[in-house]
Image (cartoon, rainbow, N blue to C red):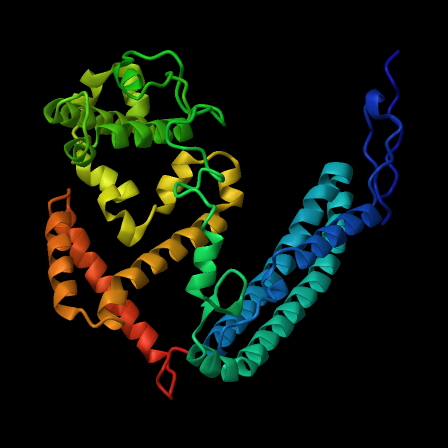
Length: 407
């Protein structure tokens, strides 16, 4: 028999419960108090999370303290407006889902209360955090003047002034592999796929996949690492400076094809078109233009010939590394900086300590001429020169009595 509808009672300002399915018959209806509790929980999580007012990192100087303080104030204001606007909307939607019109009214009212409380909390928290950062910035002024004169530098990660002693850094690197293979695997290590592929698996043409020695369902990380490994193996600079079983001409052609394959398979749009139509589809695409293979590799990973001047770039470390590389990225960067500093100190020793200026000029000129023969070597030499000049100006400014860098 069909159920008989009962007369509808006048609505009352009480929580309305909707019918529950048999599988969830034991569940309790959600009341206005439940909605309020949920929204209060959201507020607590937001305040306890990475919100602007919770930023308590020590500023380097008054400039950074003021900047962080303004950021906290603005973030708090924006967050307050967000709570005030969104909370009633969320409450009304949750109430309407549970109790129709009456539930929407109750939920919206509860949301408005939570929004008001949350807005005040976020705004006050942002103001407190902002003022705190400005005060800490002012307090940091004496150290921002004094610490650079002691030879210290500001560690952005640890947020403290650090004194680096090259002899101690050199001692730390004595038993460390030059290629950091204790942290990241060597270039020839087996590469494993880590995440789902962006490719389809079934493709019109496998040529570019075969060039990079990957399957059509390879993920972007695998493709990137394979490109780095193979491009280094067939790089013209590497072939010309080492004994190899392949001629320079064949290596250059192989290097060019490897770059083409990476350019296509690393771009989601081009890869999808290639998977569906093959190289013919790419040739018909006017937006597809092949890039200089040497420029592509140099842009991504640098040049081995400039290793003593720039070290191993972060992108090269990343594509060679395993999952643990991210956790050790700071350690790898510290080692890189220490090695470059030691190399530079050794180069300058003959000039600054021994006074062999003429010998140094001859030696460095010869080295620059040799480096200029590498791919885009001349541009790299000029870039290193400009960076060195900027670094010299920056470091010398820390010795001036009126320390503008400290401010």
